[in-house]
Length: 404
Image (cartoon, rainbow, N blue to C red; front, side):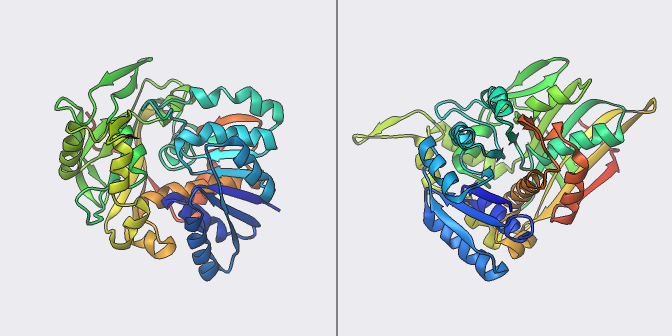
């Protein structure tokens, strides 16, 4: 028996639930929980219709440890898959400790009142999970997640030493909206408007955020989709990778943004709509970014008319048997194809499929351990094999292009 509880019924939760339901021999009992239980019921209905699998739907307050404990105990979950908001990571981890339940998430904890991304809050749980004999797996989406696995695979299979890593995330799709975010708008905008950092020779180097005229960007020729402007960003997987990829001298993260997206975001930022502090509006306290989130399209609704592809991967520069090599490992995912399979756009799909794979490896006890782990600390081979099998095939090629 493998009883799982999925917390979160947004775009990624939809994909995770459906991909788990496709493997009833692995996931024998699935419960989907959200503050908005109607979302759970809608997904459960589609799962029943498509796969003949029953999913339980439960209301949950993922900010409240006692309520999370109640739900975990009610479904006797042995693994909690957290695809809720990053603000809720610690409450869910506390509930897992209280119920002796394994834990998996896709994004690191973020304090609600500060757009500050780091693993220290969750790494601090190492001893608690270790003493309980429980496994907590952090960042098992695509980036973080698959990108970390690509790095672990490169370290194990392709190189004797890796000097530099560049992670490149391209969404060359078109959803037809003037401005929208591909995952939770509040989390997405907090992420892309922060000061940029990258690792170079043992220190974190800061550069201006993407809205600044002095931000760092260049045009990269992505496989199948062509040249796209790619902006230097800070992304959480770099923090763990500098700890676990031996001898690494530099790591950077790049993401594509269209000119209309940048223009819209600059205007919203200039008028204060990206602020995360509370303001008074006609006697009511509101957070401008949360109000903006309510106005923007739900990322889960974008898949219907989405066209184009995502291209996400890592470029490595290192040595193998004394010879310098550059390799590029990447995945290409088609928005329309993923919608036909699970009624989701590719950004949700590329996060949800690796989440299911990580959960599968945990419940099958292929990935085991006591404590808190980032995915690159585990054997990449079974994960890489599963990516090809469950919808995210990858390629390894010699890299012959150029990077700034």
